[in-house]
Image (cartoon, rainbow, N blue to C red; front, side, top):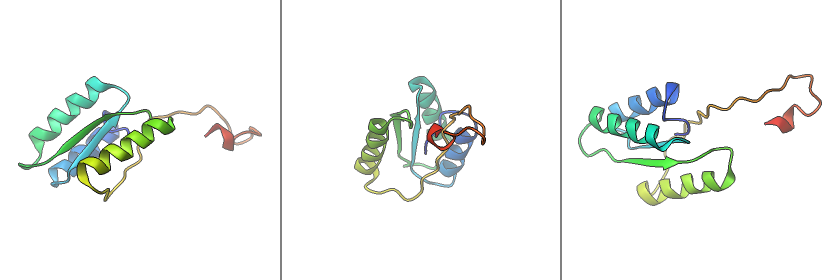
Length: 101
């Protein structure tokens, strides 16, 4: 799950863990990722696996690392929740509106 080290993403990853899912916790700040991972392990049923990946989803190399790490650890990907906390300053009237994303 992208953006799972705080806010809405953190709540979603904790819910998935409570329901017994093995989760990937990712974001740009390693200390926040580690904190959420420890909380997830406390909340989840025994035997749950987590994966911590520091990644910036605006960077292709980081996305590749995130996917390859996930597949290597869990051998598959069942659910992807895209929850990046990115803001783009543009209005619909900007002629380059689409390229800003």
